Amino acid sequence: MNWLRILKLGAAAAALFIAYLAGFNQGRDSEELKNARVEISNLNATVAQFKARQNNDATALAELRRVESTSRNELERMRSQLAIIERRAQNDSDRQRNRCLGLAVRYKEVVERADRAIKFCAENHK
Image 1 (cartoon, rainbow, N blue to C red):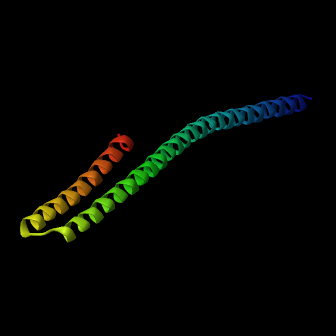
Image 2: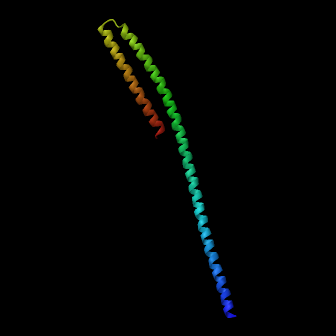
């Protein structure tokens, strides 16, 4: 009879110990799940920030392309006008002046490209 009672107490203690281990593991798993959810939320926020930044960069790049195209058209118009003026030049001093105008057009083109690049970098890479 004593053996039976000891056996029952041992079984109850073993069941209690197993329940404790199961609860401990479940609590640890629950904590890991909670940490994983927090990490997923942080990653989703980071992805949203990068998407917003990508959209801003795409918009800025489209604007830069539009401005560059307009500028290219203007420079082409200036070059064609310069070619017409050069053809009409009568003497050497006129030709010299026209060469200076040609250099001014090239200078303007280089300065505008540099300004656009600096502006783009300043706006999008703070």
